[in-house]
Image (tube, rainbow, N blue to C red):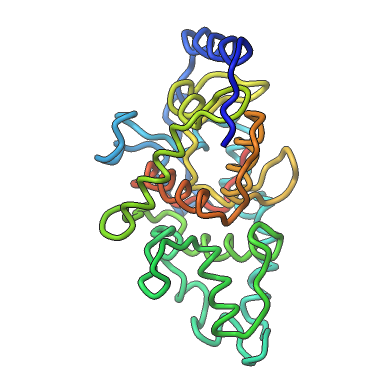
Length: 286
């Protein structure tokens, strides 16, 4: 992408360095338990392949007490409205083959438990790494004979959330070895690439300056174990790729599209940085 140059980038870098001097890591350890029964790991030892941190934190630990509380009860979590909508779609026949999701996978709770925790993952038949969204669309097209959903559209993000709910509390365990390794390496390179006029990489914010204030909120480590995320800022569910797109755009660079090979690789790499944290999706963030 386009890497801008000049005094503006230097000024931003200097400002971030000054902020870091007074940075605040995540609040005192707090416990996330959903519905009084699903215990989440929000702080744990960093995976062996991650040299940047000794400890990784869920984005939940950086939020205000009020925002945290919204995620602790499904009756308060605004994302669950969309999960309910997807539950109806799960059982709805669509496409030329007269099938629904349930036709192949049965009850969503039984068929999808543990799935979200291992995606993105290598798909042998496709010969590439697939995200959960891509797998859903593959099922729609090849099994159901239905039209694919827009990658970050409302129907898709709701279905991704429904599938993710079935893995809440399970540890993220994304595989990065074997045939997936080259895609993971591509994602890692992208994570450390400086973009745009501001010459900022993912690492500049989420690795070098997490815990500091940016605008009116704290920077997190950029973990995606909670995606899809209901953001209070735009009052809707947001995908990881939509967040990636927004971050690159904010550096004043031409960005990639959701579902692009670049963002698939980046999702695999960023997801692996959170191996060991619990699947929280759909979570609530500012």
